[in-house]
Length: 161
Image 1 (cartoon, rainbow, N blue to C red):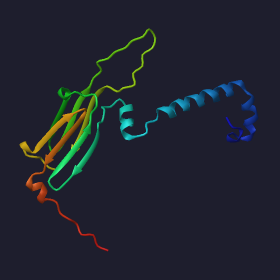
Image 2 (cartoon, rainbow, N blue to C red):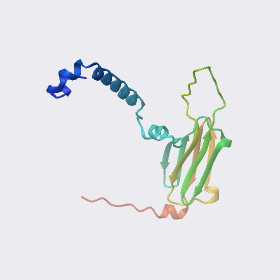
Image 3 (cartoon, rainbow, N blue to C red):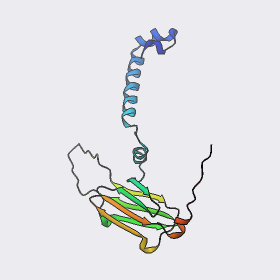
Image 4 (tube, one colour):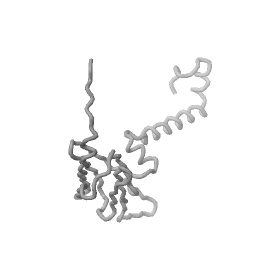
Protein backbone atom coordinates (compact mmCIF):
# COMPACT_ATOMS: atom_id res chain seq x y z
CA UNK A 1 0.00 0.00 0.00
CA UNK A 2 1.57 3.31 -1.00
CA UNK A 3 2.21 5.57 1.96
CA UNK A 4 0.73 8.56 0.15
CA UNK A 5 -2.74 6.94 0.11
CA UNK A 6 -2.95 6.90 3.92
CA UNK A 7 -3.21 9.76 6.37
CA UNK A 8 0.29 10.69 7.51
CA UNK A 9 -0.42 9.85 11.11
CA UNK A 10 -1.20 6.22 10.22
CA UNK A 11 1.17 5.53 7.35
CA UNK A 12 4.29 4.62 9.39
CA UNK A 13 2.36 2.54 11.91
CA UNK A 14 0.46 0.55 9.26
CA UNK A 15 3.36 0.02 6.89
CA UNK A 16 5.43 -1.62 9.62
CA UNK A 17 2.65 -3.82 11.00
CA UNK A 18 2.76 -7.44 9.68
CA UNK A 19 -1.02 -7.66 10.02
CA UNK A 20 -1.63 -4.69 7.74
CA UNK A 21 1.07 -5.74 5.25
CA UNK A 22 -0.62 -9.17 4.94
CA UNK A 23 -4.07 -7.57 4.73
CA UNK A 24 -2.81 -5.25 2.01
CA UNK A 25 -1.35 -8.17 0.02
CA UNK A 26 -4.58 -10.20 0.37
CA UNK A 27 -6.73 -7.26 -0.74
CA UNK A 28 -4.53 -6.61 -3.78
CA UNK A 29 -4.77 -10.29 -4.80
CA UNK A 30 -8.54 -10.20 -4.33
CA UNK A 31 -8.96 -7.11 -6.52
CA UNK A 32 -6.65 -8.55 -9.17
CA UNK A 33 -8.87 -11.66 -9.35
CA UNK A 34 -12.02 -9.52 -9.56
CA UNK A 35 -10.53 -7.36 -12.34
CA UNK A 36 -9.71 -10.48 -14.38
CA UNK A 37 -13.34 -11.61 -14.21
CA UNK A 38 -15.02 -8.30 -15.08
CA UNK A 39 -16.96 -8.79 -18.35
CA UNK A 40 -15.98 -6.59 -21.28
CA UNK A 41 -19.38 -6.54 -23.00
CA UNK A 42 -23.09 -6.73 -22.28
CA UNK A 43 -23.16 -10.23 -23.73
CA UNK A 44 -20.35 -11.44 -21.46
CA UNK A 45 -22.02 -9.76 -18.49
CA UNK A 46 -25.27 -11.60 -19.18
CA UNK A 47 -23.46 -14.93 -19.56
CA UNK A 48 -21.48 -14.35 -16.37
CA UNK A 49 -24.76 -13.80 -14.54
CA UNK A 50 -25.80 -17.37 -15.31
CA UNK A 51 -28.53 -16.20 -17.68
CA UNK A 52 -29.24 -17.73 -21.07
CA UNK A 53 -26.64 -17.49 -23.80
CA UNK A 54 -27.32 -14.66 -26.21
CA UNK A 55 -26.41 -15.33 -29.83
CA UNK A 56 -24.75 -12.46 -31.71
CA UNK A 57 -27.04 -10.95 -34.35
CA UNK A 58 -26.78 -8.94 -37.55
CA UNK A 59 -30.09 -7.30 -38.48
CA UNK A 60 -30.65 -5.55 -41.79
CA UNK A 61 -33.95 -3.88 -42.64
CA UNK A 62 -34.90 -2.98 -46.18
CA UNK A 63 -38.17 -1.64 -47.60
CA UNK A 64 -39.18 -5.22 -48.43
CA UNK A 65 -37.88 -7.39 -45.57
CA UNK A 66 -35.91 -7.85 -42.39
CA UNK A 67 -32.87 -10.09 -42.70
CA UNK A 68 -31.40 -11.57 -39.54
CA UNK A 69 -28.18 -13.54 -39.20
CA UNK A 70 -27.55 -15.22 -35.83
CA UNK A 71 -24.33 -16.94 -34.80
CA UNK A 72 -25.25 -20.05 -32.84
CA UNK A 73 -22.15 -22.27 -32.78
CA UNK A 74 -22.43 -25.63 -31.08
CA UNK A 75 -26.22 -25.82 -31.38
CA UNK A 76 -27.80 -28.52 -33.52
CA UNK A 77 -30.66 -27.62 -35.84
CA UNK A 78 -32.88 -30.07 -33.94
CA UNK A 79 -32.19 -28.13 -30.70
CA UNK A 80 -33.20 -24.78 -32.21
CA UNK A 81 -36.70 -23.27 -31.98
CA UNK A 82 -37.67 -20.20 -34.01
CA UNK A 83 -41.10 -18.65 -33.45
CA UNK A 84 -43.07 -15.43 -33.92
CA UNK A 85 -45.73 -14.29 -31.46
CA UNK A 86 -47.15 -10.82 -30.82
CA UNK A 87 -44.85 -9.23 -33.43
CA UNK A 88 -41.74 -10.63 -31.71
CA UNK A 89 -39.33 -13.14 -33.26
CA UNK A 90 -37.87 -15.49 -30.63
CA UNK A 91 -34.85 -17.72 -31.05
CA UNK A 92 -34.48 -20.46 -28.44
CA UNK A 93 -32.16 -23.40 -28.23
CA UNK A 94 -29.83 -25.46 -26.15
CA UNK A 95 -26.11 -25.89 -26.43
CA UNK A 96 -25.20 -29.18 -24.83
CA UNK A 97 -21.93 -30.86 -24.00
CA UNK A 98 -21.24 -34.31 -25.35
CA UNK A 99 -17.70 -34.43 -23.98
CA UNK A 100 -16.79 -35.02 -20.38
CA UNK A 101 -13.28 -35.38 -19.06
CA UNK A 102 -12.52 -36.07 -15.44
CA UNK A 103 -9.24 -36.22 -13.60
CA UNK A 104 -8.71 -37.09 -9.96
CA UNK A 105 -8.56 -33.49 -8.78
CA UNK A 106 -8.72 -31.32 -11.90
CA UNK A 107 -11.66 -30.39 -14.06
CA UNK A 108 -11.61 -27.41 -16.41
CA UNK A 109 -14.44 -26.27 -18.67
CA UNK A 110 -13.98 -23.07 -20.67
CA UNK A 111 -16.82 -23.47 -23.13
CA UNK A 112 -20.32 -22.34 -22.22
CA UNK A 113 -23.29 -24.71 -22.27
CA UNK A 114 -26.91 -24.08 -21.54
CA UNK A 115 -30.03 -22.48 -22.93
CA UNK A 116 -29.98 -19.63 -25.39
CA UNK A 117 -32.71 -17.12 -26.01
CA UNK A 118 -32.97 -13.95 -28.05
CA UNK A 119 -36.10 -11.93 -28.85
CA UNK A 120 -36.33 -9.35 -31.63
CA UNK A 121 -39.34 -7.03 -31.91
CA UNK A 122 -40.43 -6.90 -35.55
CA UNK A 123 -43.17 -4.25 -35.39
CA UNK A 124 -45.43 -6.38 -37.61
CA UNK A 125 -46.72 -9.91 -37.94
CA UNK A 126 -45.49 -11.54 -41.14
CA UNK A 127 -47.70 -13.76 -43.29
CA UNK A 128 -47.29 -17.56 -42.90
CA UNK A 129 -45.21 -18.01 -46.05
CA UNK A 130 -43.19 -14.79 -45.60
CA UNK A 131 -40.40 -16.27 -43.45
CA UNK A 132 -37.49 -18.20 -44.92
CA UNK A 133 -35.00 -19.79 -42.50
CA UNK A 134 -31.71 -21.52 -43.29
CA UNK A 135 -29.26 -23.05 -40.82
CA UNK A 136 -25.73 -24.19 -41.68
CA UNK A 137 -22.39 -24.32 -39.85
CA UNK A 138 -23.78 -22.71 -36.68
CA UNK A 139 -25.29 -19.73 -38.52
CA UNK A 140 -29.03 -19.13 -38.74
CA UNK A 141 -30.23 -16.85 -41.57
CA UNK A 142 -33.78 -15.55 -41.63
CA UNK A 143 -35.51 -13.42 -44.24
CA UNK A 144 -38.85 -12.05 -43.12
CA UNK A 145 -40.82 -10.31 -45.85
CA UNK A 146 -42.82 -7.33 -44.67
CA UNK A 147 -46.58 -7.36 -45.26
CA UNK A 148 -48.05 -4.56 -47.38
CA UNK A 149 -49.47 -2.77 -44.34
CA UNK A 150 -46.00 -2.63 -42.73
CA UNK A 151 -44.49 -1.17 -45.90
CA UNK A 152 -47.26 1.44 -46.14
CA UNK A 153 -46.87 2.51 -42.51
CA UNK A 154 -43.37 3.92 -43.04
CA UNK A 155 -43.51 7.71 -43.07
CA UNK A 156 -40.52 9.89 -43.93
CA UNK A 157 -39.93 12.85 -41.65
CA UNK A 158 -38.57 16.05 -43.20
CA UNK A 159 -35.75 17.59 -41.21
CA UNK A 160 -35.68 21.36 -41.23
CA UNK A 161 -33.13 23.95 -40.20
